Image (cartoon, rainbow, N blue to C red; front, side):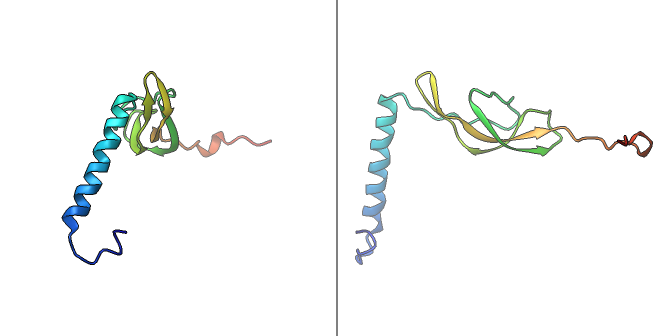
Length: 102
């Protein structure tokens, strides 16, 4: 419908989208659905976070580097864990004289 409207009245479209967003937010508030947005540097919590990738970083290992998707809890349960990128420690290469052979 919005694509068929040739009037150029985008303020009405914007107001309609804002009203829909407000109603959705009210529904989330009444059902106690919130958003958990972990911050970079937070410790990885397997009950709230899902590690999607690990990257070598200057941060402490097992801390969040970036967030791909926020978590969604319902009351005390996590409906969808936050999808995060986690820091890992740089592995040191083994010296050549310590290479094991089978």
